[in-house]
Image (cartoon, rainbow, N blue to C red; front, side, top):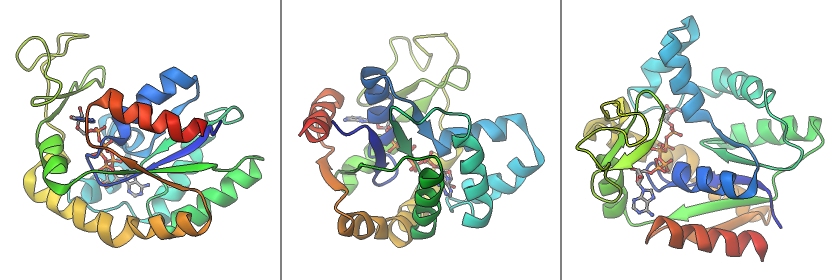
Length: 216
Ligand code: AP5
């Protein structure tokens, strides 16, 4: 079974949703560069101010800054039994960096799951996303609404929209994905590591497709 996994796909396609579910089913760490960067912003550190100007504009944090951040983030995890990476690598340069980092820890990626859904579905998933600023739970007002109006089912906190989920920023994120991240489809395809997953349908249906690929 494949257990050293990278999730790839457009913003809002469902990488975080699938990755967290997979992590709890497989008992391996789910590691998200986006979550780690957002948590740095809430701490208000000096480096966070640098991250924020790129993130709020829908741009990638430059490789020269983010690669060191990612290495530091990964150093906190035991990667021996496997991992699920969400949000990185995001450029061909980052892919080379991550490969070198993993080699130095005696491990390697064995599957890149490329999640694919039509643009209109992506827009609906992003525009409907709401998050809990306290516990991080993710909802969707169209597909997975909270039980009580705009309040977190787990901790009762009022849900918010992510700063970078505003329409004008989303357009930029999609453009940046197509220019900078989509080349990874060919990159990992050429290495024989890429698996295309149809991300349309219920969360469980998509998870079943992923599990079939990982077991196959
Ligand atoms: P990041 O946090 O990585 O954002 P992203 O890639 O744009 O992905 P999202 O979190 O928006 O979407 P997702 O695919 O995880 O979807 P989700 O599961 O939430 O990055 C944010 C920013 O950080 C970047 O723009 C950049 O500035 C910076 N950054 C991060 N990493 C970086 C790096 N390596 N280098 C440089 N910069 C970096 O689902 C979306 C919604 O759909 C939810 O509401 C969910 O409930 C719903 N949903 C999910 N699945 C389904 C389904 N099957 N049916 C119906 N609804 C569904």
